[in-house]
Length: 289
Image 1 (spheres, rainbow, N blue to C red):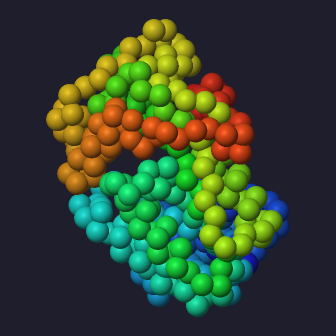
Image 2: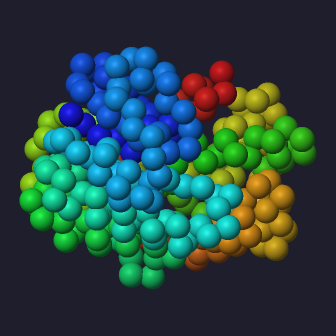
């Protein structure tokens, strides 16, 4: 049995799909979004709260391996506190559960002592799981998800431009979530984890927001689509207007400003092991047919 958190998301959903296609026993946590499709394919569905150790023990009970992550609810007014609560619940539920192999979804920034925002919650989860006894733990620290670019489509389609607080020419390691899911699923299937391991996943190349915007424009029939760096306060207000909580909106803008200064990718070097195959061009061809 393999337990999967986040099975309604881009990574967890693909992992659950791969495991079911491999005819493995799969148990998924139905946290906020229904998972009837996976249930119809044979997955065991456990309904519960990702911040409740009792519910998580029901997910992990009898499982030999597990994919764990922190669900991201950007509308949560207590975003940071609830992610900390979920991290503690995951570690508590895994302790003594008998799960022998754990794959953890994380991000590059979680490896830094000055992590803040979503990476800080993942850093806390990593540290909690580093104390887990009797289980091999693999932390997958990914770069910037290409899927994040699609959040700009309403702005692009309404204003014929793209923009954020990020500088236009900041190089960003962008990765498709399918490549993260592929690595996670492969390791869960191989069951070859021992001790505590960390693996970077950085995509095939760094991409700037200006280049990504031009690529999106080409797919949408908007040649030379411009990218504009907006003032932070305007971005914060726009994110809050789009449904993010005030805390989450502020954290997103703070992270964009930190990325302008090189955080967290400055000094991170792509190796053959960290590079994944899906280019931005390939991703956009599939996401924007």
